[in-house]
Length: 382
Image (tube, rainbow, N blue to C red):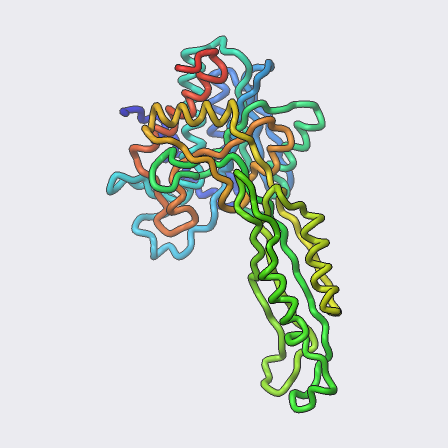
């Protein structure tokens, strides 16, 4: 495939050091391109975060491409084989921070739209892009705020494609039709500090928590389902003590996380944790934080169209998956009837020498275009 516009745009985006939440005018570049083919431009900036809503048409169905222009920090510059914000081609790959996560996807969104509109200037329905500069950060002023605005004025999305990197071994081999929820707990188990030689005068929270810890780690929270693996409980940090070898600590701090399926709820997980801690008669406090609810798009119109396009262009059968971390899909699903994540390889995301295969770039753009053809031209075999 000889299409080079996607590569050129990906390079232009990578060259802008848009470490979250600094957009570095990436969204302006997208707006200038898409305005030329009839997209309206609406900036929705909150705090230091830049967001943009680009839309062509007002009729249903609405197909939305969603993504983020921000990238994670580079890490040690001296460990990169080429400067992270100088897009570099070598060994059949495009190197640069954001190449995989996710400036290549955004470039392919734009070029797919440009070709589709050129061929179908009077296409059915509408096309939109929802782009934020704060997906890699705290995500408080990004996609979630745009979704609130759209929801308040009654705008809904029929089909949403989030450009997160999803491929494992080759382009198109996996797409995400859901994500697990993420619930974190910051637990403080209280004891009584004392001299280690006089344990009868102290209460050791490490000892009192140990039986509860065993029960928490052995608990079967749910069995998952057709789309989700079983809910996972993991301890990320345990800390207690003064650093001295002769002092029983007065408190123990435990940080843990649930990645949970649709078979469990935030409320049920909290209740069950409290029940186990109470069973062991612990004196404790917990601060809870839920950064995302699980969401799922059942196999249907959007997944069928995506898998058909992938089969035709990439020659692989896409697996549906809900693995991995959270994404902005957790916010968009509130107004999207069907949502998937589909992008390039995730093998090097957030790493030194992040890269994508050069051959995958035009293919990804072609997959997005084929999906537009199927969803908005009335031709499922376009």
